[in-house]
Image (tube, rainbow, N blue to C red; front, top):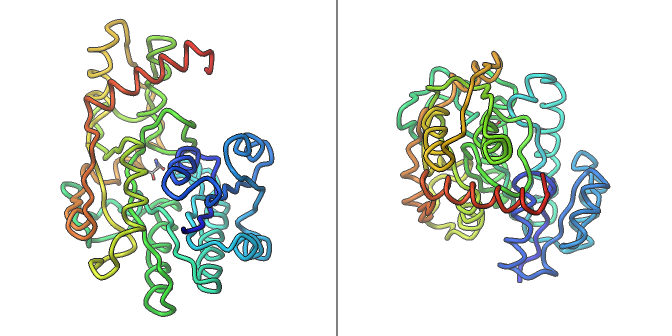
Length: 320
Ligand code: AKB
């Protein structure tokens, strides 16, 4: 059985990826690592957990050696809006964690998954049905890191034979840990606000389309791409994937249908406005479908039903 290390395990994706991997590979075969001791304390209630700074190559390599790790999921990163507040820090963390992961994967023969993003695209990219292989000239530091990361990961595969694989995540909607610092965060926050307060102020323009994915599909995607038959992979870093594309207004209309008292207002954040305007409206994910069988199960309506149900349950339990 494979042994997996999840780096940055306490974030939005890691919090749900760790139990998902445990179900797939066994509890003892999944190690959850995060920078923050308080987060590691939380993770350790349900997983083998440890403190790890992904920028410390010696400590990182030592962990991989000690636990005889076969595959790394490198989730350590600052997201798009936070990245614009301190671009140099975003480069340091996002590229530093990736470069260490690549070198350690090369040294110890590990497979490596590092998510890319719709943020890898930019204003000059075709926005409708954005092709798998197209213009990539992002104008955010997050996007610059994602494109650089895709190129580096492909380079380590062709030059050194490292088994690097990745998907370009759209906004991920989930009800485990909150996202933080992303442009697509509104699509998660709104559910908590709708259930608790019946209102929400959105920082993204009402008619701005962006691709989205519900967490169960994001989890499936990560395992599926990592377990895919390598002989079928024409691409590696990174695959377009999507399950739905909607505007804030369209999402809020669906919430209103289920919570009639809900109302939304807008207070546009200029940074999120500019970032979201430069991203695709909807991706073409046909290569992922063809090369490793990507086939999302959750659309807008099922996702909205499930998010409202989950947030109501959390509210009843006093969790927010
Ligand atoms: C963000 O909004 O920065 C992320 C992403 C789409 O990569 N959720």
